[in-house]
Every structure is written in C-alpha cells, then in structure tokens.
Image (cartoon, rainbow, N blue to C red; front, side):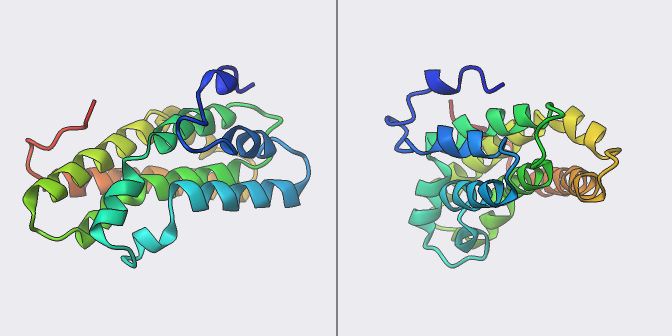
Length: 176
C-alpha cells in the first residue's frame, strides 16, 4: 500500500508532512483519520479559495503547487483497499480538489494570461481526479452509505465540471 510514496521528494514539493498524513488515512483510529483529512485539505484545497476569499495570485499559486498533483494518485490508490476505512474522507478530498474548476469564476477576466493559466491547472487537477472514475463507480455500490453517497456525488460533480469546462476556450490545455 502506498508504494512509491517515499520516492516522491516531498521536501522539494514543500510538503514534507504529506506522506505521514496519507498514511494516517489508513489508520483504524477515526480521530487520526479525521486529523489527516483536515490537514490534507488545508494543504491542497484551501476552502477559502473555493469560496472566493483569496486573491487571484494566491489562487494561481495554490493550484500550481506540485504537491497537489503528487497527492492525487495516492488518494485514488487508497480507495482500492478494503482495509482503508476513511474512504468517505478521501472521496470528499478528491471532490473538493476537482472543484478548483469552479473557482475559475473568481479569477478576473484580465489579465487573460492568468485566467488561461489558472484554467489549464484546473483542467489538470480535474483530469488527475478523473483518473479514479472507475473506483468511484465501484464505490457508488459500497454497502456503507457515506462511501456510496460520496462516490455517487463525485461522479455527478465530475460530469458537471466537465460541462463547465466545455464552455472554456479550447486553447487552454494543461501545463506539462
């Protein structure tokens, strides 16, 4: 479980705490899971961005952080293990990460290059989160109602966000 986690240079990504937080999501202690969920959320998807309480330059900085992109595959991986009991938290994190697409509305129209850059990053987050779609579909049938509801919710959100991105100019592709 979480193979490759220690091969990521989390220090270079300015997120040396992330491996421990991801491991804490696998704990059987609900309070440890809850703390990890909150800390991962604070460091990857500050809700103030999604609510429009950050400046455009802060939003652009937050979404361009490589730690965000390095975290997503590990969160998706954790959804595939029966022994992980924090799946509803993980689905919630992935859902909120995908919602960076919606925060686009808080980016000003000018300068256009900043809005285009933000959209390219938002599309990249969306694409990375979407890679877990087959797991979300499986979890939508989970016997635990909270897991099934969150999995169904993220599938609906991904569809809605995809529709929103279809209204964006096609020249705005994800950065490499």
